[in-house]
Structure formats: structure tokens, C-alpha cells
Length: 230
Image (cartoon, rainbow, N blue to C red; front, side):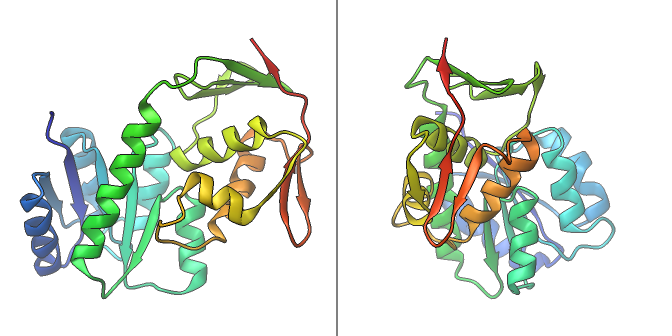
């Protein structure tokens, strides 16, 4: 099996080295980048399978790096940051982070999160279904995980795609936030259930389908589009 590559973008070299040591023991190929203004170049050259990203960096800050990455890629990103307010977490998740860990943290727990995210990604890449669904100028290829609107590709994160797929497969049924979270993130997954709200908001914005995802106050959401299958 090909060794997975992880890029740690972190200016605290002691912390970065400690995380590197733990990940190396689990047979990951690890690289460290300490400068924010060098990060995007390193990402392009190293081609990592996952990024562990600090927010407070010299040069370009972590949120700017994440935004640049998300403009062209669904590369898995876990934010590791001393910023622990709800606002910071929401901003990071809205920009497309797959997870958010606050400092100080257990390195062992971080490794578990990395492994969990990789498992979900590997599972999601398995083409279990081959149908193509479409509604309101949006086409979703479930096998390739490609989404287009008016024939233009829409870049969704892994979780955004999974939330969308779950909604449209259950069109016209009310789904609680808890049900969506359990389906997409897993009942044993670390995180905040309010991330469901953020992902719904991003789907509405990216696909211009605010009118098709109805908020059911106090419960969750219902997809009201007419879904067809090719």
C-alpha cells in the first residue's frame, strides 16, 4: 500500500516535531512547513494526502492558506490552533476544514482523528453506486463524486458532498441534524453537531439551492427538489 503523506504547517517546531514523531510511528510520510508564505508552494511540490494546519503563522495565515486550497482542491485539512472560540471554529469549518483541534491537545487523539478521516476518505472513494442524479440544473455523479451546475464543476468538500447526497437520497423527508451528523460524521466521531448547519449553508451558497433545502425549525432540514436519475 502506498504510504500516505501528511504535511504539517506549523511554526512551533517543537510541537510539529512531536506530531511528526507520532505520525511516523504509524507509517505516515510526514513533512513540516513553518512559514505561511511558503505553504502553498510546499503543498504543490509535496502533494500531501492530508494537511494539519495551524492558523497563526508567519507570512500568510492559516485561513488564507485554507481558502486558497479550497479554491481548487478537496484535500483533507485538519486545523490545529490555539484559537478556540466558537467563531474561529465556525470560520474554519465554513472555509472547508474537515476537523478543528484546539491547543493544547493530545497528540494521540490527533493521530486517531487523522486515521479516522483517512478511513472515511478511503471508503468514500469506493464507487458503491453508479447512478447520476440531477435536479434544478445540478448534476451529481455518485461514482466519481463530481457535481456540476449549469455544466460548471462545483468544488465541494468531502463532507459537503456526503451531506448533499444524503439529503437528495432522502428527498421530501425531514432529517434531523442528529441524523445527518450520524450518517456523515459517524456516531463516534469527534466534533460539534452544529457543523451540520455550516455545511448546509455552504451547499446553499455553492449550488444556489437555498429554495430547495427547507429548514424545519427545531428539527433539521428537508430537501424539496425533484430528483431524477439518469
